[in-house]
Length: 237
Image (cartoon, one colour):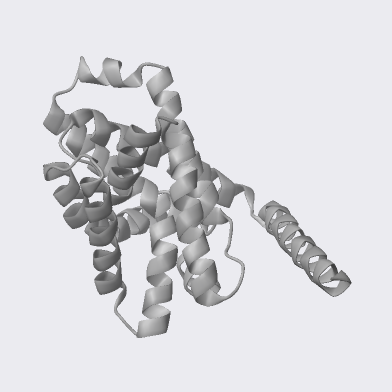
């Protein structure tokens, strides 16, 4: 009995120590990385808000989060955290090690910012000035550009991409194949639970990916931003 208590205590300490180490490691990032990351998350939340208020459909992950929010009525931030914890637990059990916390921070922070824009009345402001297709186009550009910034920062990665990289590593699939399958699975689950679907969802799947690399090239050449992310992401996850 005492041995079991000691083991549980060690596990609790180990997990707490791991989280503490992960949090402290955030201090090692350079100012330009943090600025790119925070700007990227902010822009992505604005793009996601444009998708949502256009009522033409949104990205697969938000389809799932919105469907859960319709059921639980807890807000996008908390529902984003719930989805993040589910995928991080899946990743942890699959890889038999503790997951990085950056995907949780990225997904949850994006959801909280969407709640902030809603509270500030941004949706009503944009709807009065832009039609649904302009909102959709704006959302596509913002989400693609913000994704480039987040990748280049080397800090965050979207929660679904964390699982996708494991599928690539474990099964030898291409990133495109694994990403498409996981996004279809996420979207299908959200849609069956009552999440929104429309031309915006298809546009997100077809347009965002191809735009990320050109935006990264533009950031490097036009704005002299350093790409901290691709090598770190592939080696860390």
